[in-house]
Image 1: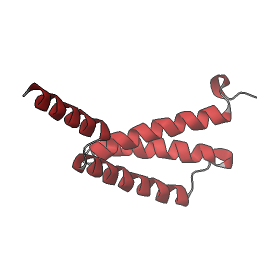
Image 2 (image 1 turned 90 degrees about the horizontal axis):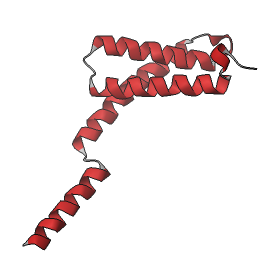
Image 3 (image 1 turned 180 degrees about the vertical axis):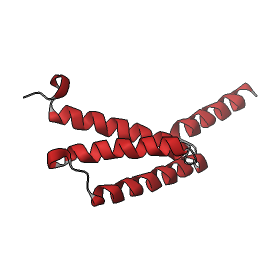
Length: 102
């Protein structure tokens, strides 16, 4: 049986998870933005709440959100310090082309 707008519970969970994931990514890159932090927390509350029977948000969920926020910042910092695989491959290719042209 469908829920709001005909979506199944699984679809609603996946949608909320994806929204929360995107907010976490953005927050990790902008951790000083208080408004973004609040929106990210609300997205987390929606996501964790929908996982619970009766959509009740718990203290454990609040702890999980705080850990998610900390991890988002750590992941963004780590990404800044290490170039992505794509960027590394591009640099290797550019170096190769330069050597070929010489």
